[in-house]
Amino acid sequence: MDFTVELTDIGDGISSGLVTAILPKTGDSVSEGDTLIEIETDKAVIPFPSPKEGTLGQVFIKEGTEIKVGDKIATLKTQATATPSATEPPSVTTKEHKLEPPPSPPPAQEPPTTLAEPPTAIHSKSTPDQQPVVNNAVAKHNQENLVNTEHATEQAIIAASPGTRKLARELDITLSVVGGSGRNGRITMDDLKSYVKQSLHSQSTTALLPTGTTSPMQAAAPLPDFSEFGAVEIKPVSSLRQTIARNMQTSWSTIPHVHHNSKFDISVITAWQKSYHEDFKALGSTLSVTPILIKALAHILKEFPEFNASFDTIKNEIHYKKYYHIGVAVDTPSGLIVPVIKDVDTLSVFAIGKTLRDIAKKTRDRKIGLADLKGACLTLSNLGGIGGEHFTPIINPPEVAIVGVARTINEVVLSPTTKQPLTIPMLPVTLGYDHRVIDGAVAARFLVRLKSLIEAPQTLLMGLELPSK
Image (tube, rainbow, N blue to C red; front, side, top):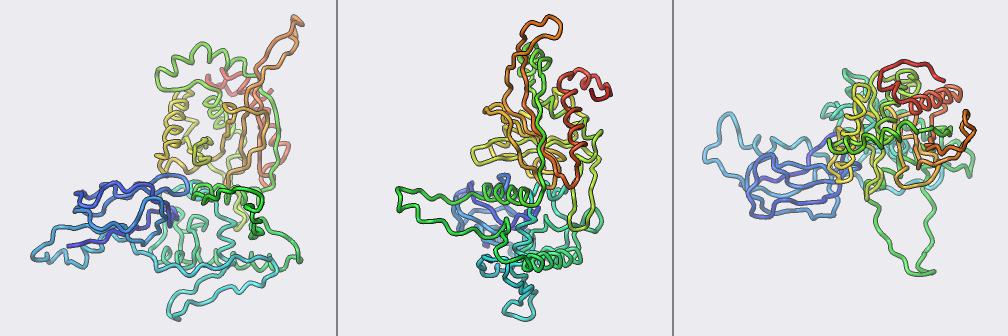
């Protein structure tokens, strides 16, 4: 008998992706759990397993095309049972792996072009017995508040009932942006309704802005026809690049950024590298400045809890975290991805370096798992290997700070004792922070403390709680 395999809910609010690989071919035998296809989502390539054992029949999708939850993938020819078991009727076997596919999505609507357009709030579908669909007010609010999936929730799968998930799909709302009030952060129906009300309120407030006032998320004006001036190549924007663009625009337009710059003397770290670099490398680790910075940042987060927080604008709350996970920006051919090293405060510099090498490779190969992209307290972006001096990194919501590091610069200074010129390796460091949560004086102390640890890293490795210089 033929069994139709459909893309089921893979969690984390992911509703679609790009088919990057179809592994078996028509006629191949497939075991339950074997990977049928690989799907590229916002941040990772996710394998989708076969729900049954059988022979692959018709394939409904192609590599390089988008697939959504509920779409057909292929048919599997499974062994038919002559007499159905009383405890396992056929109606169950054909749906046992199907996790409530969503209804067909509503027709796409044109985005609003002005902020003065009055909100129409909610309108009904063609059939009165179906759930209402929120108009552009919710769609726009959902877009403006959407953040990286890895930071929106710290659970492997967002906790919500099937009914809540179904309503969210019908309203075109991403569950990862809805705060859960239930046990262990579970999203309830009331949470979803509250989010809808907040969305409509936000749109109503926007409609009251003076004519001509622009919104960061407002639809941009159409581009001119560049072919009038010469040859042009047009390429579609990848799902990863769309996510990066959306998140960075949301961050820059909603978070009041402030940046502090400094330079750190890394003479001690440079000396360590000369002595122990090859030993670390032979054992699968790395002794660059990055692992030491990661260790120092986790240490300082305990001293400055304001930096280990997230600001809830809907509930007017600040969430202070009691764990110490550091995100590390990794440059990949597809775009910037931020894997997370967990529980850094419990790891040695050697262990951090080894973990960093492993997750960086997985990230560049797009084999990083979703669990390794979540839960960062603060992000470190190191462009030193590429070049440049200071830069101003953008905060990765819902974090409230980010540290940017550029290429080390050799500066000539006079020795305070011999008065002879000395060449000192100086590391340019920029601290970006959310001014809603962190005051300038606190940020200055944070940067001074980080400087003291990096310039005397032996105190950090010894576990000494020395005061800031």
